[in-house]
Figure 1: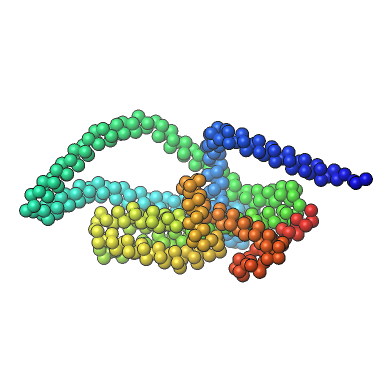
Figure 2: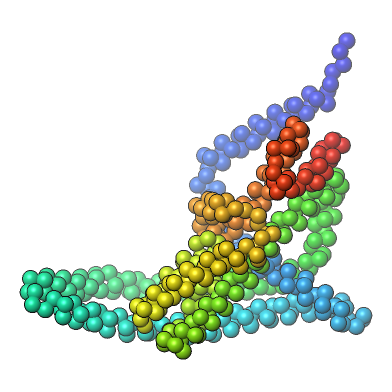
Length: 411
């Protein structure tokens, strides 16, 4: 009589039950997608301070880890335990000082640019109108047509001011209380986020140790080692990408500022600080950032002189070629490992799903997904004896896939 494999039967039954349960959950998720979306947005609103603090702590943990070792080596033995708190304090103070410094430079320049724009636009329109009149001198038909167009434009502007602008201003005044409430809410979330950030930075080693303890308690050691290596790779990818991008953008902004200073002494170039900050900050956005920053910067330069604007556009093109082909690849060579096509694909994909957040985080997230897919391909090719199909640069990660197969073979 054949022995019944009860273990196999139980496993198949559980697999069928889990599959059916997942199918039912998917059906209800589709049916209740609106309510789920509302609940998700509500949950994200509640967790906004926590997410804000966690993101800030993650961005600041690298300088904290770097600085703590230096400070700990300088402190006497009885005060080494205070190195972590001292490091977090110094990093936060430096961060707030840099933000304050940037805002103190940018806000006055921005106000000045707006005032110049308000005063310059009517003058530019008058200059353009006089130039048109001079060029059309003697051509009564064309002059009549231009005058009619200008009168019609003035009438439409007056109508827009009365029918659209004034009601909009009244609505803004009526919603002033809501605006104040929103600002207060943002500030409160930001303050709570800073407090959470401080707690996370101070206890980052404790949290890491607790996380490892839970992981090794939950799964086998071989799988835990693999998971930790994957987490380490993800952390390296994100830190390398954002750290490299911030350094790259700072260098680009500094080069732009030096150029603007030279042009200021040579050709009365306006708003050197504001333009350099715009170019540097928008350069953090992959692929589209340089173009996003170039448009408002060129408009600011155009106020002073069309010739300066043309020179600035040529400079931006040369600067972005240098950044895209020389500086950027050197700083980001080991962080993402994606070709230009996959960078553009990841930005387009994640921007469609998550908007501006997807533009910022799409590249490192897709780099992690791409690396995981590459490892699966390596495992499949090794099982079928087809590793000779890979190029040498495509065979990276074989050591980790071998450990994954050994862990699976032990089960």
